[in-house]
Image 1 (cartoon, helix red, strand yellow):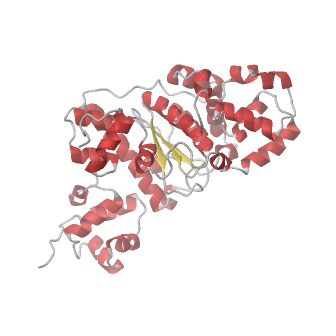
Image 2: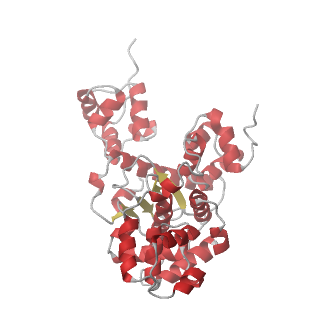
Image 3: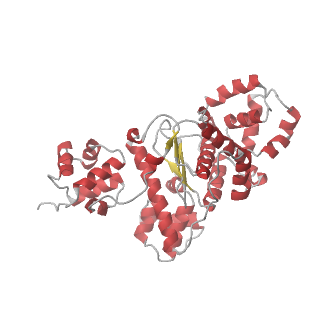
Length: 396
């Protein structure tokens, strides 16, 4: 018996493939057919089976219905809009990164739809800032006014993973979605931001050190505050661009408050142009949960480190990007735990909205499991982790 064929619009297949920089060869390998067959699909000379179409749709992360449309749907084009800090352009993006950005866009749209279905308004951010503003003031505004995190709370977090989670949760309460990029070479994307409001998105790469992720998170938030989508493929410290330096200073001011730093006994007693050792820098960096590379630059901002140790330590710390992960190997994120890994990628706001939508009958079980990226049988554990209780999915 012949398999049912999908009467798709071949132009939509080409469009969906190009949106994520996939090649016909990749489609053919994924489906398990020949390149010639895929090319015939795209030329309208043959049609895929329903099963093949579903495989393609899942691979390109598109609803099956999109392939039947007469023309492409209106949607954001963040990869094209992103300011590229270093080399590269959207045409050269890898398929994996292009698909990750598409996921970010989809998750943001899901969150917006959930707010609408629940009859609620997304949190509203203040008006965009300007680079002419003092980054110290903007950093203080971000930390103390927008996030409301005091220094005692920050230094009370136990470990880098706890700090990363706490910062993300605070950001998401203000209406900034935070997601993790996975399976992406850090040379292509260390972090990115989609600045569209409401619910702008910041993302960091799971391949980076934990402290590196925290600084990237705040650096991308600074770009969101400017109202600019961006992509970073290297450490922000490597750029001499004025916008990048401004965002670095905002991030540093938020993570390492000036008043607390300068009043710290070690900084105060050493005075200006001090001869800091590697151990001393690492110890003080641990107080704030930042990388030593970020801390020495902050000390340099206020002339609290002499030129000789600064240049030597900068070279040392910049070359140890992964040292933080080594120090906390197998740390508090529950490495290898499916549920923790999924929630690290999704953040806290979207999962919480999804369960609230389910409780309000705004979405069903199938849609909830799709948002969470899991099977229905796992939703009870996710409910416990996200909502703190099992209300809808009670253990048998």
